[in-house]
Length: 206
Length: 206
Image (cartoon, rainbow over all chains, first blue to last red; front, side, top):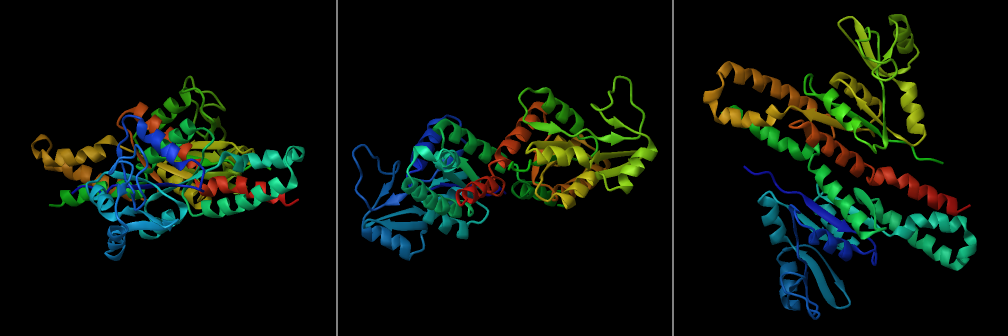
């Protein structure tokens, strides 16, 4: 009878501060969505807790998950696998609870192709919009620095086009507030609330 | 250079309390969107101010607006015209400011066909969802009352499908908060922020 939960994906270019924003979001009380813990084959760093920071598994175990279609998305960086196990997400969504993922852009695109009705949020570096100011006051930066940043900006804007929302990470608190606004308002989208109404009317015909 | 503003349309079935919610929204300080005053041929009621509550015009003036294509939407109720003049909206959107309309459902559908990138919010009566409870406890209502409400519910849900968001008017303050969440998060939608980024990169090629 319960409606399926909503999948929320936070991603963005490398170094934009996705992890910091996600940690700040989950450090706040009263969140009504669950964090999906990633799985990795890399060694735990001091202080990291299995099942909280990551599920730490062997290479063999990770590859078995891949073979059995148990990963929603995964990637290999520097000889280690990182990815999102499917089971926790499906179980949680089936319970009607919303799930929050914080993943790399390649992973996000894998998820988008499998879950088109998810909410995809792109975290943008603050200097992407400040670029305009820097271009206006050319004196402050060398042309090489500016050209390098423009090249990077093209890549970031290309990525952004595959997302639903763009949130500037100018300050962590601002970004967290905006992400919470997005989650609250996405829950009010007609395609998301419609099943509740239709189910009610369906029941009324019994 | 400025990006075009966003059009926000609040509508809903007759009697749902659209006007009350809109007034409560605009009574709050710090709103960064403009209210579009409707035009009508009906007589002002005591206390109503021309240009604030409505633009009060003659039948001839209103019909001239229609002929000249100067109405975004309009309808005739009980021998009087009601509608939204196009000029104020276009001028305000061109200035990059967001405009808020509170109109009847027929008008909202006229606006949707002309402004598909607007944000369309449907205010639903609280008893639409309470219907479920009322159906479960059949003893409290006669079958005639329940059947009448079910019939009305079908119509309301049909209407809702043409909107982006559904907000339950259970309490005016709750509805206002949700509408503000929606406006804030819609401003972060990639198709809305993209022009800013593209313009910035376009400038950089000069």
